[in-house]
Length: 256
Length: 339
Image 1: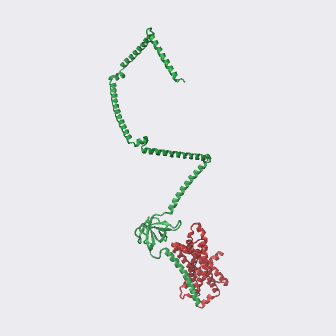
Image 2: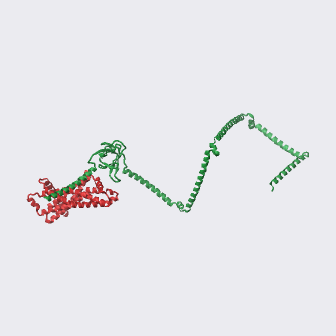
Image 3: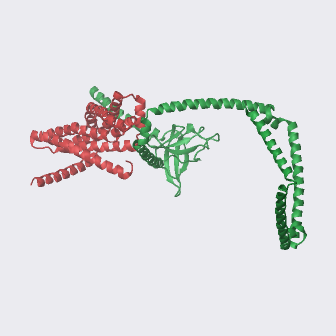
């Protein structure tokens, strides 16, 4: 009975999200783009998330380096630590961890915001006043997530590498230029570009799921909390699914 | 409005920072792969590229000067590798330079090493550099395996030898014998003395050799005296002459023996009669028997004469004279051996 309900809910959610995605693309190319709202959302979603992303990225680079160091020394390749950390951060850890933190912060925020607007009937009021709420609320937020997450990933990678540099120098001595030379010497376009491209998909998924969960929030204030929570959970799962899909695609294209 | 403008500036800075990092990253990677700047291409060919891939570094005398741009099979035995080299290296790489595939450390990426050539013309675009076989990890491991087997065999032999030494009672008895050091010490002393004697002998020998060189002594004269050498030559000549005479004599004796042999064979001459004629032998035998008989008869007659009264006195006188002579001889000898 429970399995049947779960399956029905999963299929219903999937169908609803697909329809919501279609509606997003339909509204995306409709004229009168809400540029001011888009810029505002970019500021809120991107710029305001930088301290949190920066802090976690710094700690992640530092800890990853310090955790890898003993193993690298054990295998006699301690000199390859910058290259190893660089590849790990740029290829996988940077985009995925940043996207997960982004989902936690922005996905829940969008879900809660739109949910509260839904339960307080502000969205309905917008429709009555002649404003397209979907275009104003959803398209701008999804596009902001789509464009801001890659920027956050890039800055997070840079801060993470700096954290790694400090981690390397806690128990060793490597100059700044040598560290970054070793990092970039061992990087290829096939490391940077797929990671950069998949971060767009991560951002798009976080924005879309947050908006979907908030836009169809119900059951009053309880529903707002549930929307925020499920937005984070679903977005996190979708991020991992997209990551799995991305690695399969890059592998199939031979750029892995 | 001012707040909105500030927000825009913040957002602009945020986006620009992210894009700047992306651009710097892409530029550094592109620069590392020689996508920017002035480059030229060189080619080299191998039978086996040992896992070389596009993007691997190219080094000239240990300096990174480019990357691998393309790897393609041109025949079933040859693979052509296209190298992108920095233009500034063009004057330094000669046509006689050789390439080999190496490894960046034991477990690192493959690299192409360009070894500087002997003086010659500088390379040009699309020149094909000669390649040479590099040390292959598989070959190294194979050699290491052989070496390990050899070491294992040596260790096994060593173990057996040590075991035999451990089980050898005679050796341990020898090692535990406290008198051996004294014997060795004594032997060493004797050896030292022997060496001193040998040294003394060598000194003497040196003196002898010096004397011989100076022509002193018999050996010196023998080796150095020219007069003696002349005498020796004369003696040798005489010996040669004597030998020649002896040869002639032997030839004559041979001739005589041959003629005697001929006489004996033909039944002629006195030798044949003496050696071969049986009648002559009978006559000789009879004559010898008659002589014996005659001698016995003569002995009888002489004995008879000794007892004849006319001659008996003579024989007695002779006996007495003999006895006297014997006595006088005996007395003289006693006097010489007396006190």
